Length: 294
View 1 (tube, rainbow, N blue to C red):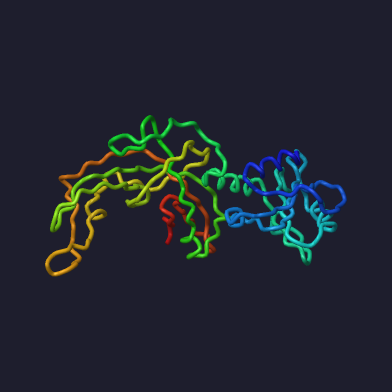
View 2 (cartoon, rainbow, N blue to C red):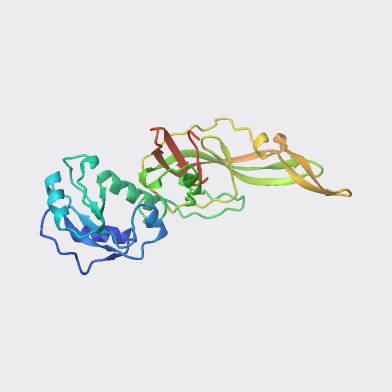
């Protein structure tokens, strides 16, 4: 069982040194390895350099506080992570403390979240096979039956702005519509326009998109989709216009009569969490922005 957990971590690209284990008495908690060369990606999810990784296995026997306390007596100072795949008989808040020990405890849900992050971020390939994505002459990236899954951008700077922890979130997929909109901007001169618009909790312009080869097997979370989107306000904009008096900002309005829209069903990688007040937030990993309660 220990070897299978090591294999899972290696699949998730966690660097583990499985030699020179710390000396502890045998018990229900077994050593897996020690992290090294921890990537910024894994650090964001809670791993740190030199962390000792342990597992209680996945047997039917539950893990109780007594087993944790016995193990805690022997382990060396430093950072330790227990990966518990079986049932636990206590709350995390009841975990014992020892000076010099930084203890992190992952339950079944925490492990699922860690794997889910890796799936969304493309670290591991687990999902439903889809047709090969190729671009057609009309600009469509979606031949064949959908929905197709958009690829996450992995820019979490907006979460840091609001002091939200991605480690405490759960990865999900948001059903959405993706519109390929073409038309004409009317202004001092006419400008041909072609752009992608994501219809998911509002209308959002996307500069470029990528499609995942497979759809992750994750839960889906519904967000509002505009059944009759109006692109005029979204696509109209002020642009620099050069004339005899220099560079001036002039309005260019999207001509609805020139509009042509091609719509695709898509799934959007996202993360759901709760802030300190218990309010739910949703982070859209394609838009790299928080879409609810902020």
